[in-house]
Structure formats: C-alpha cells, structure tokens
Length: 77
Image (cartoon, rainbow, N blue to C red):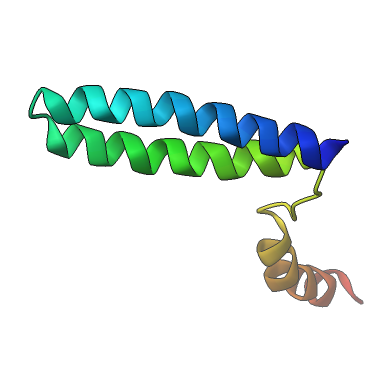
C-alpha cells in the first residue's frame, strides 16, 4: 500500500510540476524553471521516501563515530 501511495504522490507532483515548468518556460523564465524543477525533484524523492516509511540514518551518525572514541578515551581512568 505504501508503494502505491508513494507512486501516487510522485505522479501527482510530477503532473503539477510539469504544468508549472511549462508556464515558467513559456514566459521566458528558463532559469527559474530549471531551479524549480530541481527543487521539486528533491521534494518528490524525499516525500516518496518518507511516505514509504524508510528509516534514514540521522546526520549525527558520522559525528558519533568520530567523537565517541575520543570521549571514551578522555573519560577512561
């Protein structure tokens, strides 16, 4: 079911995005259209991942691997 919901979300977002890009492209705002397409692509990917319920690692994990040994070394007697 989550796959169907993710696919429906991406499909609706793509249709809306294409409509907006065609409008921007037609009014000679090509740079804005390309930036809009990039932002909406990122939003579609992140939204589909969140709807599917995929657990993404936290941004803290690399820092934990880096600083945890230092902290243990400093706190050990």
